[in-house]
Length: 384
Image (cartoon, rainbow, N blue to C red):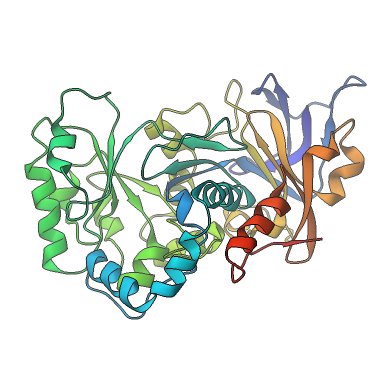
């Protein structure tokens, strides 16, 4: 497969991306030469970038609407409040089988151009997915809500994967002190990846391998986010969406919010969902270069000037093509004439803001099944 005539983020000259056996075999600007069997897709006004890496989501929580009734001091206060005031909504969503909720959570990520998502929670027993669901980590919920977290963190009988835990998800002293307790009880000096860190200070940040920043969730619950411009001096910053229980479905809106805050520069923020994330999670993707896994997104742009501003202006409806491990998993209807011999029966037709797309698998069936269990379910895409 060849993706021809695309602007790659960070490159000044249009390039061709060659894909073979699930890997990027070459990136050049030579005239494309293809065989009769090979797919060569010619693009115009199109931007290429690595499939995004979402470092924090709860896949089974993406059938929830955003739930919150006030500004909270911390996550415990929020949880208690919604279970009292939004009990009917919660019960309605929980009637949906978990497998269906997980399927929709995977599609939510795919439709945003995310080809790798780090799921936080119990290990999911799911087959090979249309995108990569990363689970090579130990998930702990939090200091206050995870039973026996001290034992789990310090158990000698576990794989040497990093621990991922919500830490400092609040704007009060209790949330700050919770981080201190976590640091104190990490007696074996495990690698810990903290999520949120709103109450974290620089001294505490040095004890964590990574902080996953979820600004959309932070502002929705706490009207505040972590001091990322200070914490980045002591730890690595990655980016996460969290689930639709606390944040909107569109990662591009999250990225624009983060950019507006100017706590990371444009390059740092871009890398937090691409190359830096790939490095931390030890993945062979996150950049468009020879021998990397072919996780690639192509999107259309509308301006004459192509640069980082173009990347941050995107939305799901602008995405023309998504490739995961060399396989086309999503494409705009406008590309159909160029997709020689594609098995169209393996894809479903959907509409994002009235723009026709094809996505691998039977997404309409997933949506219809969910609505049978919860007729009030709302989706950001339409089906025929």
